[in-house]
Length: 241
Image 1 (cartoon, rainbow, N blue to C red):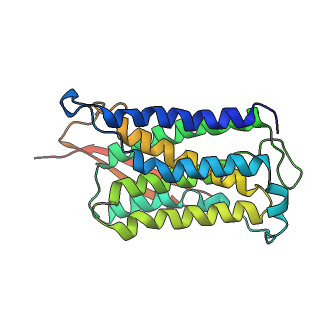
Image 2 (image 1 turned 90 degrees about the vertical axis):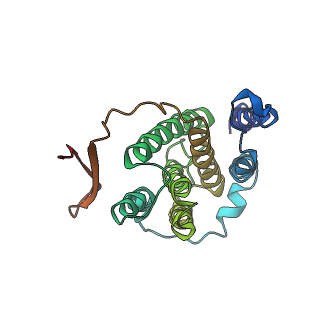
């Protein structure tokens, strides 16, 4: 591990801690109080991941079963597809399908920027002795971003559904380890970064006013699978009166 890897990782913790200071903002200021308690879990995951990267990975990998399962390549998208499936089924969410998609896209882009920067800053080698871009886990971060968005959307209407995405995301992280694609440090940090990114997006709500669709229009989202790939199809139209 390069000598500046741990400081780079801890910088994320410092940024979130600085945001926590908003909690002391007077109510009359018009700013929402920062939900610092929500950041405890992701910050703990990032911190433990950084410490394990520094020392402990090689010892822990010896006790990890070895598998050759490729399901994690597809399961990483399951929480996102689950959210849209719930929308189609009529489960009440916090936001419209457009706002869900907007915050999901912003979260994935911001998380990918952090993850990719760390990958090529830390330059940790994968446990299978492959490329030096192991830390943090990209698959795990994608899965936990989807799970965290799903949680924010359904936590007030269907708690079982809201938490289900985390179960799938955890399975993705476990498979990344057993498949020898990542160490436990990579998975913990990827999960923490994904959750922290979503929490920040949902608190600050960037592009909140951006609504390109008029109220008389509709946006339909339909997941598809053609035997080789999975994805979403979008249909936009105007309601007739």
